Amino acid sequence: MAVVKAISNQELAALANRLRLTLIRDRMEEMLTMAVDKKLSPRETLEFFFRQEIRRREENRIRQGIMGAHFPAVRTLEDFDFEAQPSIDAKQIKELAQLEWIEQAKNLLFLGPPGVGKTHLAIALGREAIKLGMSVVFYSAEELGSLLDRALKEGTIKQKLYQLSKPKLLILDEFGYTPFSAASAPLLFRLVNSRYEQKSILITSNKPVSEWASVLGDATLTTAMLDRLLHHSEIILIRGDSYRLLEKRKEGLLTSARAAGTALTD
Image (tube, rainbow, N blue to C red; front, side, top):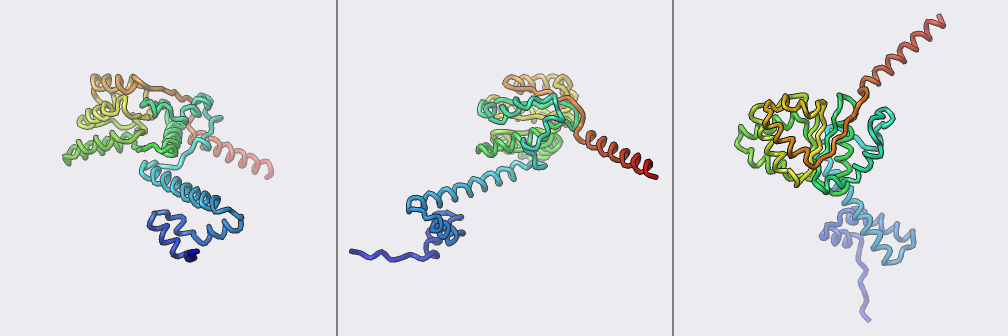
């Protein structure tokens, strides 16, 4: 009967490295010890190793997706204060977080005054999309306008529009604060047109769509863009006070309360 030669942890790690099983490679001894301590069978040990490797890869994929999206901040649905914005239907947002609208290449618009949580919700939904393996990219309207202008000047606009057409979800934030240039407005239309019924766009804006011509500087162009953007879309109107103003008011009230308390004790 042939004798099977025992293999060292270093040799096992080398094999794991060849298979690009980096977690198993880096934590070989620790994971073997855990398997022994838990009295796992050989089959259970293999399952344990593989599940740990898959978990690490998922974490890395999500982290890289979030980095690639270039979100300006960390925002999640869990930390959104729905009580502070009663005009938002929490159930509706949770349904949107299932992301069927992205699978169906529909668009989503959050419209409302500054500071009511539009960007927060856009980032949070973008993060949820990345968790499900979807590609996401985030731009403020000002950033995108500058990007298109620069690509046009550098002669790379065709490649840039193709690149922007690829992500499963394109988030365009703060549309309406800064007007697009006469050169970038038609390019934005081309981008929207290229994604029409193919990929989703999420837009946040402080302006109703009836005023978007002032942002693009061309009523005909705006009508054509809205025709494609709104054909398969959901619009959510958010009303209420700015979170930042609410916080300032709370701070002011606290300051006044402290001052009043001091006066009473003098």
